[in-house]
Amino acid sequence: MLRLSIIRAIKSGVNNFFRNGWLSITSVSVVSLTLFVISFLMSIVFVSNKLFTEIRNKIGVNVYLNEKADKEIASQMMEEISLMGGVTEVEYTDKKEALTSFKQKVKENDIIIQAIDELRENPLEDFISIKVKDPRKYEIIEGKLITGEFKDYILKVDYSEHKTEINNLDKILSSVTKAGLILIVFLVFVAVMVVLNSIRLTMYTHKIEIEIMRLVGAGNWFIKLPFITEGALYGLAASILVTLSLYPLAILLASALENSGLQLNPILLLNQTIIFAFLIHLLIGIALGIFSSYVAIQRYLRI
Amino acid sequence: MIEYRDVSKLYSEENIALIEVNIKIKSGEFVSIVGQSGMGKSSLLKLLTLEERPTEGRVIFNGVDLNEITKKEIPIHRRRIGVIFQDFKLLPQRTAFENVSFALEVAGEKPSKIKKSVSQILDIVGLSDKFKAYPVQLSGGEQQRVAIARALVNHPEVLIADEPTGNLDVINGREIIDLLLKINELGTTIILATHDKETVNRINKRVIVMDEGRVIRDQAKGKYMI
Image (cartoon, rainbow over all chains, first blue to last red; front, side):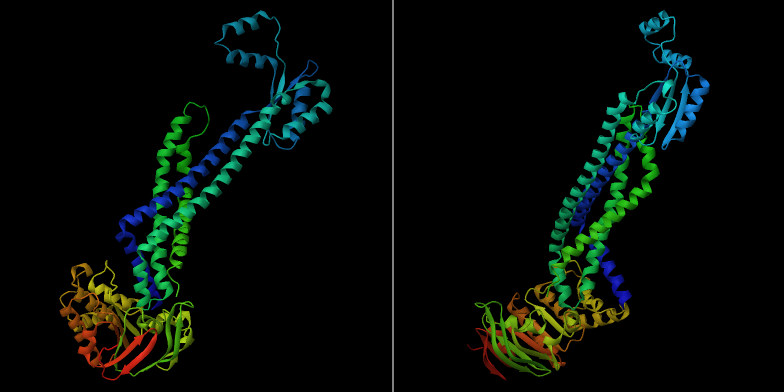
């Protein structure tokens, strides 16, 4: 009997969803909008994190060596550096290579090429470039190097030149993440209120139906279940809609990023995360629909 | 079967609906409760369906004190009582058949039994050819018949009719009253609340007159007089 009642209640919820076409469209739109806003903000936080990581990876610190340092010394230094915590990359470039690559970089600019050629000597130095996972490590590494056993071979470490940039980047990243999260929480709160009220209005049109259900002796759960089912269907429909709408958004973003030189392909990224995104939308959407319906129906169940 | 013992109902200090009402209704009776609007008729009925609880006193239904019935037990209690209203209260998006079967679905009956019972009861109220009609396609009298069928399909011991002819023309009104009399003859207790003098006089059965929340007259074969 219980199973029969549950099946009936769910069936009636599904029927209501299709019978009340306009009300369903309104509710699905509101839930969709909410999901879209959440999804959009989450994407911004995600993409900006990715972008910053990429930019950060491009930043390195170079240790310039003086005349006294030969290749032997350089490789000893590299060994020591790579043993320091958090170092991901250590690379030695001698001044010949440095000059070749510099010339390659500025080959379009005749004046610079000419100026270099006029200098009889190579104006560059040998250097070791270092990359670390966490930019805060640079300061420690710099400290260790200029006070350690190789201090006499070091001409300069260019960390100080990058110091502000690195720190700024870090600050921006953490502010974007923080602001994004605060905005998400705030918007979710606003969205829940909107969804709640819109579903409450929907429920108002069911007031008589609920009254009749009570009159013929329907138990509270028998009354609630169709509406909860309807709420869950709002969430389901909205999550499908929003997940699909991410594609046009990714295409737009892709064309915006095309010439930025960043290794980020939003379409590929979306393809990789689409199932995860759908599940998240489904979870939030259904939870939102059920919660709102449940709260909205509660006020008609007194007595 | 039904007994109101010293029942008073106060909504607020100024708004007093019932004052020390004492009524006994036997099984199989047809009782008309008459009085002007706002004199306590509906409150009296709502105490029976547990839409309201008495401020003082007790309502006994089949030996059970309704004050003892918990919130959870209310739906079960309501299935023992059929109710019809002036505005029919039908679900507009369901057919006549579905409106009636709904009352059985709520009680968890099997589909085969629902089909049989609903067909039978719609036959009894004279709507065997209107199974698939929606309320909007039915006349007022027919809609009230659907409501009566819905109220009866659970085989209630008592049928409460709250101004059932209020929205109907004279002929349809009479037909509904005749149907109620027929149902009463088959053994169902009927409590009819109305302020329609002609209806009451035609029934010629027990009449309880209410005024300002009190029972002012209770006659076995009464006429509508105030």
